Length: 402
Image (tube, rainbow, N blue to C red; front, side, top):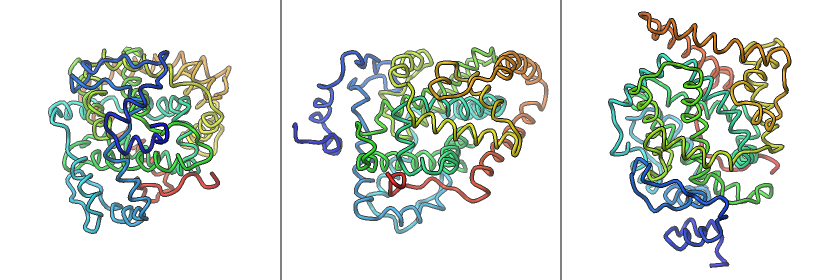
């Protein structure tokens, strides 16, 4: 057992690897969240820090080792729609994996997914801001995630990295996310393959030197910086949300978590369960890193350029980011305090929300709001991609020079 690497334990799977990993878990960080609070309602209760993706990981490692990934990326380039058949020529083991991975879980509720689409239609402004800017700033304050992004291939070109991440985020928020003509299933499965590649490749980087990246807990941490964080902030801003809308918004992210390879026993069933899980795992996974500070600077620079190209808008973006994530995270991320903009944003934003929510119930306003929000999303993608077609692709290397 002592001679086995964690990678070998992962690939061989089974109880041997799990028990070996659990035996070294720190009591101070014991996993106490119960699987009875999950969408599965039951589970083994293993600490998710030592659980990865036993289906995708050995498959993608094999594709990389046999040099098949460039051709796979070429063939999958035009695989876009949820209902689209896979292209001919893919390796048989990859086809078998994707055909299984693209199936929605049996507990997926089409009615809730449609309600979530309607909710996104009227609340797109908040969700794009919270998932994009807020979630981005939180992610750079998660040391393992910041380092994984920095030293993987995407860290060398953050505009491209953010554009590809946005493909998934925008797919989740699209009106047709899980409909046949949507793209959320495809983007989720491709992202799952990317995660498996990063797990395999980062362990070969001399700059990594840590545990296998992107564990089930790591994915849960990222997940909570998106729907859990967004819902908490909207409630804090007193955005009126109906119970059915709240449940539907959670559901679309529950389905997305499953599609990304998070095990059902870790996916929270309710917002109470989600908040409890978030409170357990976010604090222990957050903090400052040099990589996180550098990535934050790049991201806010991009945001400033998107907001007002050619003008001095960085102070405004700094203040907005600090308002969204709070002083502690902003300080970890190295975000400058802005004496003029900080108090102005914190005072003006609640008034803007109240003004906007006073208009939402009026006829046609949700549709008009969606058109504006969608235009903003498309502009952001166009800016990040320089107008070039961008797709999620499996990496074959780490960050150049690392």
